[in-house]
Amino acid sequence: MTDFKLHDTDSAPEQAKPLLENSLKGFGMIPGLHAVMAEAPTVLDGYQKLHQLVLDSSFNNDETTVVWQTINVEHACHYCVPAHTGIAKSMKVSDEIIDALRDETPLPNDKLEALRTFTLAVTRKRGNVNAEDLNAFYQAGYEHRHVLEVILVLSQKVMSNYINHIAETPVDEPFQKFAWQKAK
Image (cartoon, helix red, strand yellow):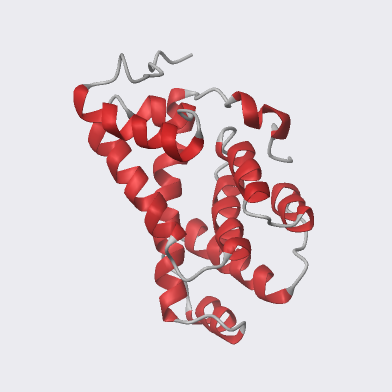
């Protein structure tokens, strides 16, 4: 059991208070991950900026969810899989896509499956993908820009997944109904 504090706007370091206010405005609550990150205001600031950059990427909602959840599931993040299930539902991503990602079963179309396969290659190979990985991704209709944007999302997810593992961040109440464990 770790002893990371879940900060609120009263207990957080001064630099983190406006960042937590942003969380409240954006989510209607302070997500547990943000409450943990507030201990190091630059970490929370970086995470929030990365999150916005991911939302501003060229990926549509389905594709963003595929990259987020592929990484979350691969990293077995007890917090992010339920949180991004709720986020995906709010983004109007279909249950078929959400369930396939959570259950590691085939996605409903080849292009999304190619995105998941490439994201897994980048994650598992720590960026050392080969020509076959890249060619399959390009043949599915993706471009160099998308390669770079997968890495952007991975950067965000490394922060959140690793912090949640170490801090054992409790799943927020709105997402507890989406509790998840990696299949063996």
